[in-house]
Amino acid sequence: MFKNQKRISAIETLTLNKISDSEWRDRLFVRKIRGEGSAKSYRAQLDGLQRGTKVYMDRDYTFTEVPDILSGATHVRTANDDKSNTSNEFLRFEVNLPATLYLAYDGRSAPPKGLVDGMEKTSMKVGISNGEFFPVYRRTVQAGEVMLLGNKNGGKGGESMYQVFLTKSGLKKTNISEATLAMKKANIKHGEEIFFGRGTCLACHQVKGKGVALGPDLNGISKRRGTEYIIRSILLPDEYIVEGFQQTSLELKNGQKLFGMIQEETNQTLKIYLLTGEKISVNTNQIIKRDDAKNSSMPSSFAHTMSAQDIADVTAWIMQLQ
Image 1 (cartoon, rainbow, N blue to C red):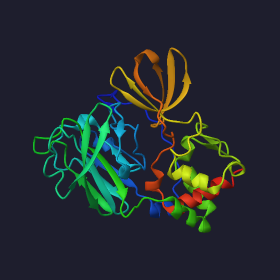
Image 2 (cartoon, rainbow, N blue to C red; image 1 turned 180 degrees about the vertical axis):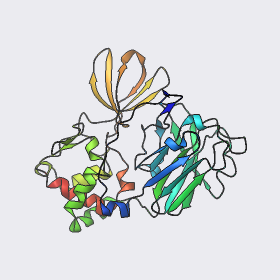
Image 3 (cartoon, one colour; image 1 turned 90 degrees about the horizontal axis):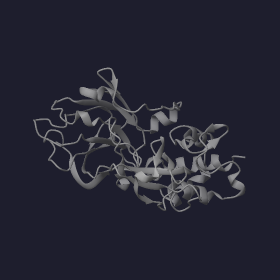
């Protein structure tokens, strides 16, 4: 993002994947984002919300706590510099399917009445690496245009900019037994589409010369593991953590918190691959706390973003890899 011809945010790398007809019909998409201030530059991170991902376009804060129901939600990443906007029509975008809209608002102040009008205040909160917690509000929206007011509409509001998350209406958490039963009708071609598309599996796995070799090798896995192992690994990734692929959290002296997978480590420096896709080097003398958590580096969101049939289709495709 640029302001006054000066770059004020990090450069992001985008990976383009072809959207299949079935994906367009079944997956929630956010498009035609527009509005005032920096809103016209906002982007939707599809199925991307999880601990360790970036909160704002123009800050390095990351999410430290994400409620289970929001894991894998689509995140409309806002800019914190828009926190003082008072507009009645600050942000507009369109959704292709009915959805549940979640708005996380700075808990240090009450939100403008018009902004949360018609919304239910939930008991959920999202945590941010600067120590703040944002209560979450929600309402149902129909396919079509969605409009949100400015963060300080009416002149009062939060000290930080709100966040917007969306999930497809009617989604329920996929369980292992449902996915196992769905194997009877597994569609390998559809599984391949998901793997190379919305599953974002290539971010950590390399198959057929595509992707990044950060996760375990999947080629020939049927000779080593069975179908149940694959299904459980997708839905409950923390159950089976391959040595060297666990998640590490770092707290730095500047207050920044990082989540990711350690790539290289010496006495002086540590290289970590973040869940945002970034690779950064950290001086070990800047680390005040390290937790080599018993968490997989694989996202835990697939149970919320994929149906039982989706999981079965991906599993069938993985099992036939040689």
